[in-house]
Image (tube, rainbow, N blue to C red; front, side):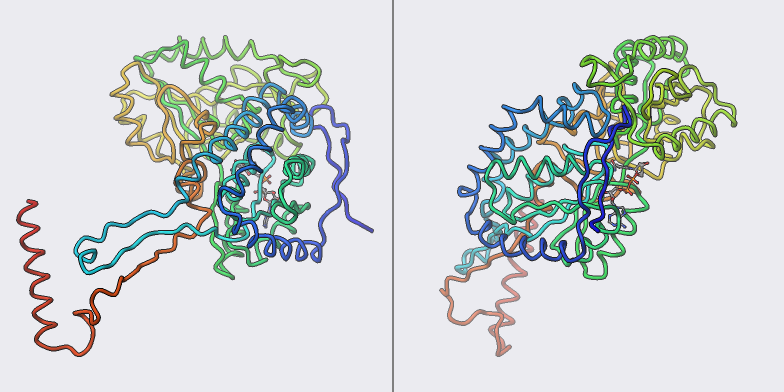
Length: 501
Ligand code: TXE
């Protein structure tokens, strides 16, 4: 019998639909098709591929409400947030790369100085990597894989997506959208299942695997990929610090902290997971944080379009959050709001939670909580704030809040993270021009921006000698002339160095 996944709405616990789990044979067939389709897709060139992206973007602009509702239903996030953080940035990515990629993927000349005078030239051509595997999570089940799919496809690769087993229908939806836009068969496919089918995809000798998920799974994927030397890009979450300096706009910072701590029920890799506020302003700041937290309206987001916060994804994620809060309370933290599930909601809801009197002995300050919890700690000096912010196994994003932009930038430059923002948090994920990715246990490699696109191509160096010299001075036989040539080269190097110093 075919194995199935039953997808449920985490806000209502009602089943939505089923999908068939892909079999091992089915997966191999899909990989074969993707390999076959890749050559023709690559040969179309950028101009040939461009109309597919234009059609996709036009269709999504006409149907964004329906897509957002679909996402909200399977993930539990607010409908408005599904537009804000899933559909809108995805459309923007299609429009951005379908223009920008032409320039980025065109050949790049390399200046080669004196060798040019010998009739030589060098340039880079950007060849698609081949077949890309994308293994994606449930927290942004649409936007995360979607932007990676677009970057891969625009560069001439074909793609196989394995969506999270908690949000398979959204994977199916992405397939539907690309099919509607007329992408040729085999250019984009989806495989369904849990980690087992994910592991099989990693073993399938693909050209690259792009993974977003937990550190533990990232480690496994890297180990499996190493067997075939398959390159990987890993985005493994974060424990992002937010530093509020004493001259910060307190009202703005409090609103920012509440949004960046609780949006998507805190299930964002770049959520504010540790907040450090200057001791001298802590009372007023915490008062404002409480004021805005108490205003959050939580509930089934499809019933009420202006709900601020939906449910979490499942019981397992909810239990992680409950355990972190319990551990913090047991070690002396005070729960100023939330700290439990709401009484009146059936799904996987957790109340927005503000903790104070926290320290780095608590799990809530060291491990990824991935839930609506905002732990607030104080600092006395800026040096201490930097040291606390950098005291983490993770390094995805961080933020500094101050009216003194120069000062904030100086601190930003000392924080260890892939992105550091001043007076905002999270939102740069929605700017396709800017890179995304981190270091330490947050992983490596980048998606988005110009460097992100480069993850999907093989830069091939083409070197041409126009055959002006029939015998190159460095070829056999080595003799006095060869030596003379080397001496001239070194003399010229010395002169150039002197002129340039
Ligand atoms: O992640 P997993 P989970 C963090 C967050 C969360 C924790 C666990 O802290 O509490 O991870 O979440 C597939 N080979 N993030 O369990 O297991 C799996 O089927 C290949 C941070 O959901 O990493 C799914 O498609 N694939 C994060 C995907 O990996 C495998 C977003 C992610 O699942 C596999 C989500 C294997 N051996 C959770 N095992 C972020 N970076 O934003 C599982 N998978």
